[in-house]
Image (cartoon, rainbow, N blue to C red; front, side, top):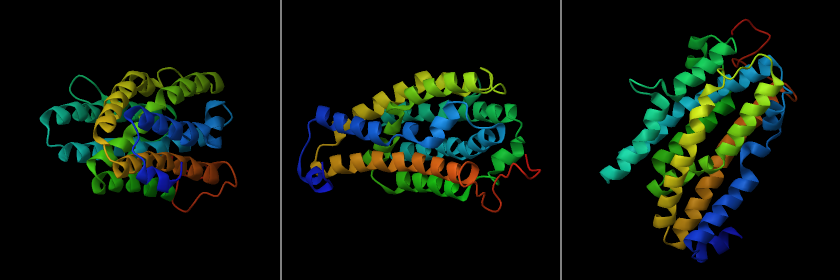
Length: 252
């Protein structure tokens, strides 16, 4: 379906959902070569470290983008529902939260926690992609911001592959190292179902539906671009930009 056709044709909620799922099936980063290498146990420890360190930038930004969404919601019921995402990642008194669990992962990989948190070793492309996502959520309509989260529709498949593949492929990975992903197996479906229902109910014009579809494409691009950068720097051709994490330097 061309962009022009999308802008003129009003889809039913079911047809809109089907188009969203088609975009995810084609564009989600589960198809990226770096994803395949990671999950098939074909990376070395330093390459896995680079992935975990760079992915922290994205993980740490999630509560920021969700706080931006909450701030734009007039309905208290919507705010209560969406703020659960912030708690999921920042934690509360009873739960360490997803960011801490991700830092436990980088700890287990032997990365210095202050170095990870500083983001000093992150690839420039990682930082740019994450910043682009935050700006998108802040600057676009609330409907587009919500729609951009719909990559969560496809994350349970990635998580299942990631956990089983990494446990099988890397002797330096344990179940405890990957405990971040256990929570996401229940959190991601809950969050995506809510966001999908919101999009189905509020994308009522052809232009709104086109914007929703483009928002999901954009988010898929954000995730894909991060893996592009990792592959370029740490796999092929292996050109690490100045200042980024370099396994050959003593900054771990």
